[in-house]
Image (cartoon, rainbow, N blue to C red):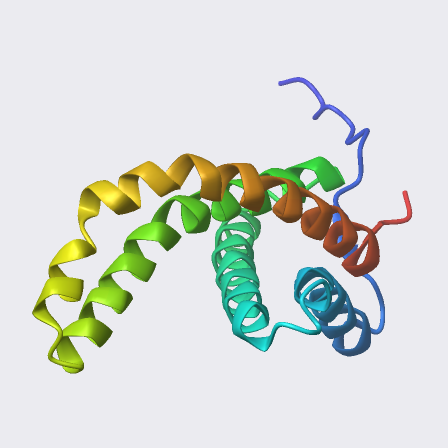
Amino acid sequence: MRAPIPQIIAPLTWRKPAFIWTPLALAAAVGWPAALFTHEPNLQRPALIAGMAVFAIALTSLGASWALGNPPRARRVVVVHTLFAGALVALLSPFVLTRLLAALADYAENEAAAASFTSEMALSMAPLALIIGLPMTLVSALVFAWLALTRQAA
């Protein structure tokens, strides 16, 4: 039996104290897109909700990977987890929005408006949501990865 191969690249760890750095990193990563809409609270809320959803999914997948014994060894791994979550949220957001608008129109008893929000409309908006959502997710992922994680001492 051969000796195990030495670990060359140490895994990342949470920056200490984690109870300060992790919320700070999440606030910066989720908050900067919302800060772009300071004068438009109707656009600020969806940006915050989408950012929170992206990081909830990304941290869940990252935590599952970590629990399975595969901690990230580079910040790009964290960025990739976040980008996949961002792509998922960006693709689903038009469908959620059209269903919400249709439900609101139905609640207001405006049947013509409720019928105008279709799945085809949501499908046509998906590429635009990706074009807008992925660059914002990339910057947010980089901000989070650099603020929340650090390299272990060898």
